[in-house]
Image (cartoon, rainbow, N blue to C red; front, side):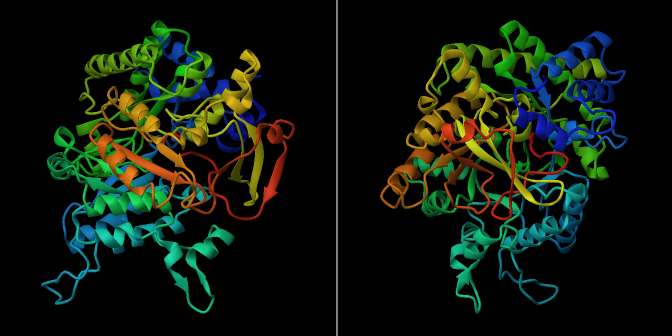
Length: 551
């Protein structure tokens, strides 16, 4: 059997199998041939295919979805920005967003260049509607663009912490404070009943950008300030906005893809993410890790030459920056297989050092061989949602969400469906070592120790030249571990780690309708795997052909 479990096979058949790539080995062959063509020696391509067949690495979701297709649209997301505070730029941002979304990619936008709401407009004599209003407009474009007809748009928006609209931005997703006239209900109430009910910025993940000025003020006073404190409070209650940290040598790197792991400078808008992940859990030793990492780096460099893009400015930016996103997946399974807790061990440091050095050296060497510019960024760790399922391993650097859960998705008949899943990495440990499933450390367990999550991310970040997409799970607001009394501790915890990580998102349980994963006891899921149930509401769209942000 190619896949570790039935659910992985189901996801492959529903999202990635297509003509000429009907099986996993066929897809791997077709993809490597299409991307690498004559750019890599035949022996390297054969080895790359075999490593992928064996799940030692996986390309990002758009690569998989478009393997063997005429249109080589391989990039998951595009990084955009408000470049100047003009009417022309305002209109262009909508145009750029629509072109990227209709091509199947997600988008990330920094709207900080636009003047705040109420600012005077000299030529017209009116006043500006503000940066948040532009993000709301882009959100509605995303609502109407059904990528390829079967997948919702993936979007990200950000704003500088000193922007005049920052308070509106911080409160933009307080749907529980937004009544619907004549109903006695709020938008949050109706959203919980009908996930597709429109709400402000509901198609878009959002974060506040913090810069060198902010971190220096924190160093000087030990206080992170009003905006940061409110940001943390919002993160603990509604789960958004998140945090984007861009200090000193990273000043201005506020452009992010939809899942935030790829970074680019505000002065180089129209950048693009280009993702693949090395699967630590399937690699035998550091020598194999070095070989896989080098070949994956070559693969992504080839992708910067052959992948189709939505408009000319993106081609121009790619030639200048040529960013790669050599990522990691399966890290928590790798630790579990060694009997380790969720922490960066001495052996893991050794592996991460090989991952860093091999990707850097190969990016330099192979770009010279190809006669192209050296990538300005090489490593970025995506959340790897769907491809983590394909490989039957843990996603990105994240801990197991839960040993067992319900996974929900949009089926081909446009009905929400779900299956019970025992996490394959957890099952491997259970089967091989006889570990009690109730004692396996998960993201939900680590909700009681958020600093362990932040320290782990910080340790890995030291090997990554771009960013890491990571979400810290928390209990619901008002619970013992997440409430008004714990707020101050969280404020200072996140501030202490701000200069060690590039970004952060919290997810408080139940804070958004439509959670795609819901933890259940191992005993409940173990005897119902492989059975598909139909669900009619309250799910987060993850179905259709393709994937975003490395998914």
